[in-house]
Length: 297
Image 1 (cartoon, one colour):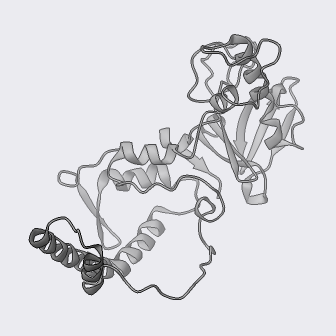
Image 2 (cartoon, one colour):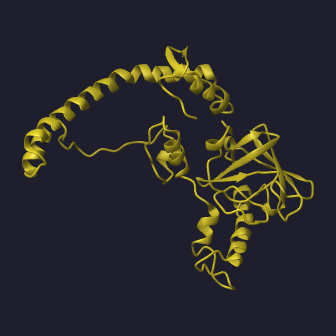
Image 3 (tube, one colour):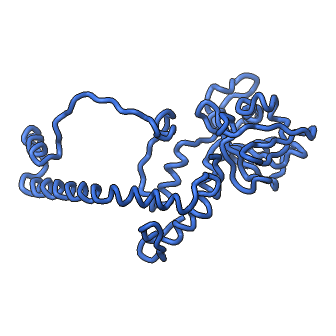
């Protein structure tokens, strides 16, 4: 979603003037399913903006003053050659601050992506949709690529990596991937290859098996593996699972033909070529980045 700051229609809400496209996106796509109402979100956001805007403006003013002093110094002296003199100047204008005592910080009330999960931390301008999308996707990768290119899949029995694509190795990757979701859904499901469909009901993932029986995967609000979904709860487009801080997304496409007969709706991991794959897709990218998603509260 791209919004022009200059031409966007704005609406007033909670003491803010918000671009209508942004307001409608939050109301219709981002907030549903989170347990946070539109009015509550904007009221809380407005309190943060009004509390910190004066301080941010003051910090920007200080930064501008320091930058102006550095520019004038460089115009007089050119590129710094005497580093001791340059450091003394930067200290004098407040750019370099004295080192303080040792300290520690807490991670209470901090998102696990920052506090406990190792991964890229990218800061990008939120108004550039491409940059923001790339930053979000930096935490996700193709399971197919990870398996094919590493020794997680042995090179025995003709499954060597080689210089080009090796169909034998590709099949081993597919078979490994088909069984991998079982690690997320035990003890609810003993064999994920028997899964034939999904639906979401009351915060739980209802899984239909090939024999017609149903299994329930509890939601994350009850320490279950099911985190969220995208699309219609009765016929979701993707399912997001989690175990030990690792997320796996299963993308569902009912129009994709596969050799598995009735299991036509579960496709392969994201960012992989369009060769036949026996069924699974979706360990790769954030479903919410590509469309409307539902995360369990």
